[in-house]
Length: 350
Image (tube, rainbow, N blue to C red; front, side, top):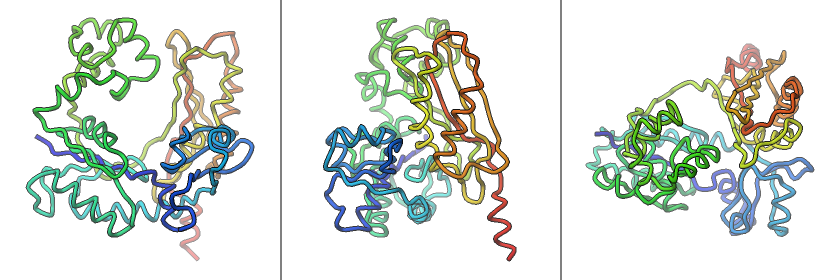
């Protein structure tokens, strides 16, 4: 049986800013461009108390928290801190799967420090992160990845939560089904129509009924309801693509989708670079009300150089979609085609 830890840094971008500038500590801090079309990249816990969240338009954040302090993001600094934390992770296990700059899965079934339990290992990692960076991290400890990820959010910020193998079914039973990965607004609505609102109710639903309604997703939902997740931790897996999607409570017309693009561009832009590799292609994904998927992609002569450029390219792709009066239940923006950064290689020659 695996021993998995999900480590998630607490309000990472905002916490780095507050650490490095004492005047920002204990203040409602918003990391993002304070511009007309700006989007919140991160919010301190002081700002979150007012309802400010990442990917929210800056204008909305100002309404919710007029006293908020805005600072522009410094992704180079965040990447440097993330690399420092990654060194700590790999000193405990070679099985580290980064998900973003601020979170990762670790398989500590056989850890390098000789700790008897994953709980001890998680405590030691969190203590070392704080000693080295003065930043806090929350941890979830469980026998598989999806349980560990749920657990890491259970006692945020600066907490640890453990789900023992024999506790998994009882822990999951009362949770709303939208806590399961893959259950977005649309799937949650369909499950509600089947009178399935909790994981316990999902667990009681016969597998054939789930397969008939959801196809392959039905099999996945059935397994998650049983606490089953066989995915291994995948170390050093090259990034193939990053994306942000939004499923609507009410289907929208094509002309209404452009307003969603700035927030998604803001979410994916921090992940446009993976080491010395850079994303070359912008992808637009749409799903119609009858579940048909449309995709458009664009590879400009040079890799996108800013969040604003990603948004503009996504808008160009949206304009390529023929408007036949159909409605859409989902829109997504992604970055793909990660290749070596030619500009960085050229700089190294001189």
